[in-house]
Image (cartoon, rainbow, N blue to C red; front, side, top):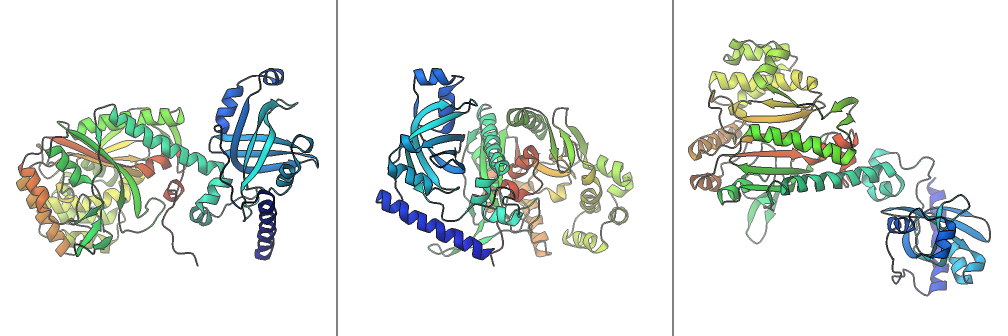
Length: 507
């Protein structure tokens, strides 16, 4: 097979040399488009052949050749650009000899420029009657054969440029991704949020619980982290007087790869002063419902084999109620870590995993330990039941170092996570704005790190100082953009919605 491909490449290089001999230039750069294919189609509208002949529409289009139907002295060439596909008709007695020779030297995959007038064929198909035909870039490597395409998923991810050429479904996924980001941006802009940019290199690890990537700044001779979240910088801006801010950001987390996790991923984080996590639940539900209608024209979608409906009111379920419903927790289990530990094991969690979580908690109250252990049962047993959109609320304070405590129960926090199709899509909470409480929680994180928790945050002294200047009552949220695109396109693997996902080096 490799020998066949090498021969095809050799033939294409010979053709490129012959085209260069005709044009006097190897890669011409003087062809100017009049517009995209879609513009030509729009200009023609529903005009029939006689109408186009009576009022000629001249176009100059450029794009990639996707098909050639040759009839000896004429050929139809299907040319595609980012807006669509249109065929060109090149006839020997309508062009000069060099132009027709370029046509004969054209291969599928070449990039060409065509200038001429629009007409309709006998079957009514809109076509360019070519007066000028140029090969602008010779594709030296043949495209995958159309009857089997590029189906190996790793190759599709590794050679995304080829994947986009030959797979319409991939192009549509990334068009949808752009629409999703545009919708989110407009949704927040229309509600008075200001888009900002914050640093991607941090000197202090914070904003989420995750392992970081590390780098070094030579001029300052200091180690830095690639950001795991922009949260603490965005809340500094709220302190500074920007009451509604958001950032569409790239985050980096040095964790395992899976069909839901990529080390580099996109999030939208937004913060609103004088709001609570309850307000953000309403806002998030409105965002998802409107986004689905805008992007898909319906609130229903298929995600990982499940039919999802974003139309009905999203369910709201507290952590404790979820543990009662799905894991059989009783009231005593929320206060006694030994009883909670037993419940966790009964749910099928490995004993070693439960012991590890208990150990790295350090010195905490029995209630905190029981709730933290309960989160293992939640992840193992409850999450698989969260198919339809569900806001899971009231998380343990011991695992939520940046969230405001509940007035009714300080061992819990005003926080929710959004689950759809058993996957977490977002995390939000009423922000902790008590500097002394925040300082104590950072100290707890440092103790957890000393006990072996590699994902614990560090003590951010400047952030605590910012809080002493006054953070208004605020709610904030982070949504995983990649997972939102997966939901709305029906993709099962996060790599399918990231243009260039991280892969092992090619052997």
